[in-house]
Image 1 (cartoon, rainbow, N blue to C red):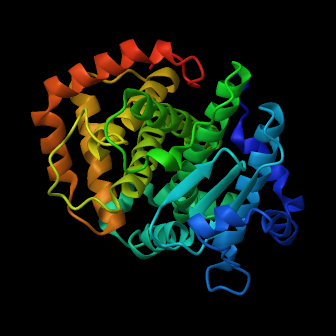
Image 2: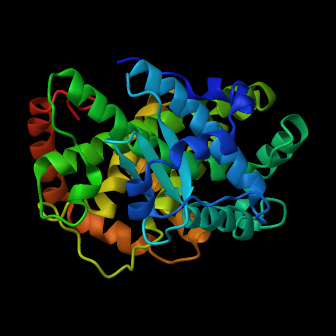
Image 3: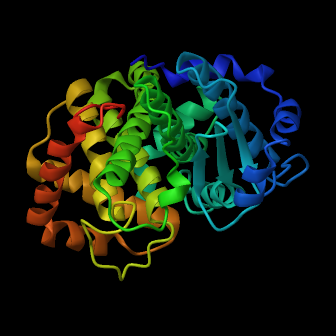
Length: 343
């Protein structure tokens, strides 16, 4: 499987036309009726954020759709406020709710003040450096981490479909068709696989930021990477827990998608592995501290207080989570279209 470095696409997306792509999308009326009409963000108060997100993701999607033979493929921002994001393999379209972008924009600009908030003092120098060297704030970077994660997750579903078809299958893997269904191991594996892929893609962005930052902050590069990873994990956790009510007990072999706590563990595995590869190995206790700190920042970002609840869910369900993970790991080789192979 060919995986591209997502940072390459920042040089390509200038040629991505929202208007031209939307006109090509309009004939796909069944999709628009299901997931909501196109949100034309031109003239919106958050046009700059929507435009950046759209052009980057569409250019990235263009390249992957060519590699995986599902070209052309389109992304659009949907008016629908009742879902986060969805991929429809039959039409090769990804829809992202406008509320995802608006809410994340509010999270990262309204709730994170890197200049004046004393609890964010460890990030102040990084933010100043980014503003001076890149003309972008750390707020913009963490917005990208979280919003791109939603896109990468849905891209993974289109890639799964392409791999599935390449094996000679004629039916379709339609995520939307199982959104409210009962437990199915294959459905859970697709979601785990997509989260793995998305987290790895975001890790590329983290690495790029770190490689630039450590030149400037060379005397404390391990601390810089640790802080960047903690904040990037927190940004994705905030995306994951936006609609969590804090009351739901953890479940395992139920529903179409894994529980949010399990998905946080999946994302943590990717970033902890990344930290070990590029900086230092953490002891189990240090790993738990990093996850706990990231959850605490996710609370701050999302304006909620779920970190202790998530920590309790994970701690109290540790044995069952390990059992669930072993089961999924043993089952994953049966589905050779999964992007990450054995989880």
